[in-house]
Image (cartoon, rainbow, N blue to C red; front, side):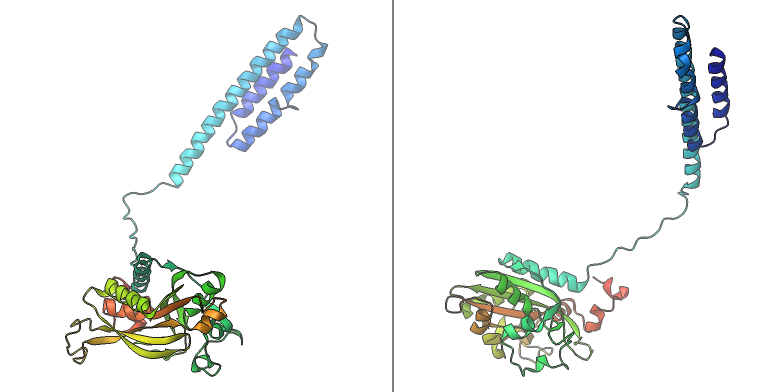
Length: 340
């Protein structure tokens, strides 16, 4: 049995020296030291030995096992070093090669404007909510008290997907969703993309951005609306800006108004840009929420009242950053965007 054990050792040591990969090394370990390995099979015959021979053969077998395991471990370390060396040579980085230039982007003027508007209203106690761009006719028109014959319902003005589904024409459906799902008091603003058919020119696009606000609570009056708008305009454009409310009509508010702001150039004194009027442009529409709209959303109009307003974000961005063509906001021209 001693001869068999020595023969196994010599055979194992000889084969180990010829190995070049981990898989073969593991196969060799199993071949000689595994449960069904050669050394194990020899040791199973120790029961036939005498009591004097058994401890001698056992000690010899353990020494051979240790020698083979030691050689396997040394070979494993050697193979690991060789693998690592080959990997490093293959993945070597030439630090003398110039690095890649990473171009950092800029905040888009529309994104900057939306964030600024939202921050102003959040500081005034409003919550920011969002809604889907694909809407139902019910939320987009019906619940907002829009007449059946209103021009905005025409196929020539609105992008319909089906008879009952469309691309929202304003962000007002978000107000409807909020009023249906929540009880007053409510104070929210919602910004996002809206869609209406329009020929593209310097100031018009079939896709544009709106921000709308809604306040519903007990004892809300036109005075609250006016103070909110005045505060917002001053926060956005400066303390020296003034507002002018003109009567208007919207089916979802009553009474309704359009709001003009003083000229950005002369601050209301009168100049060539404002034709001497001191007023710049109509900036937003607003009004007291029509009681029918409140009732449609399950809110008692005898107990609650509210106001709503909406403004074009694209127009504000163009005024704020001196952009004279709305196309520039959507063309993703780096020469334009790098200015911001």
